[in-house]
Image 1 (cartoon, one colour):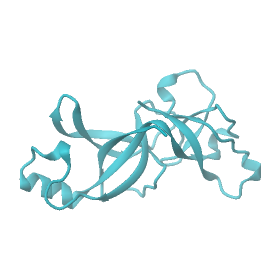
Image 2 (cartoon, rainbow, N blue to C red; image 1 turned 45 degrees about the vertical axis):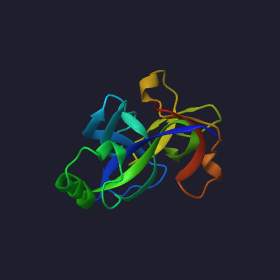
Image 3 (cartoon, rainbow, N blue to C red; image 1 turned 135 degrees about the vertical axis):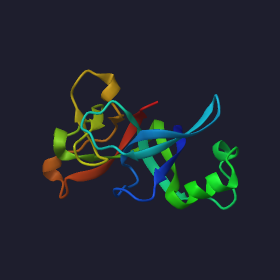
Length: 161
């Protein structure tokens, strides 16, 4: 399988977030090379947003010392400040994987586009034509009348880039 992911920083103190949630960039924390920046992210909170970064895969404590390549130019104090306030995360941007969706946009068919919803971090079926709003394409259908919950994790192809 192919999945392209970005490293990022997620504040430890903020809204709850879950693996599979859609996130956006809040700022650029570190610019180490022309090919390597490290973004600070937050959970996406706007329906049909064009600024989505990808889908949260995992989050963990920043390692002791400085084991993050994009942060290698930071001083020990700068790194420790990030260690106290942020998690290191991985965010999927392209390839296949899974995404959290809600019933806000109705049933989802295989091939439907997924955009952000008004439910924090969750996607919805998107029938519009603005590709800037597309986070993923569903490769699994959801018939919400058959579901117990209004949120589900489904297989998808990420299209955030």
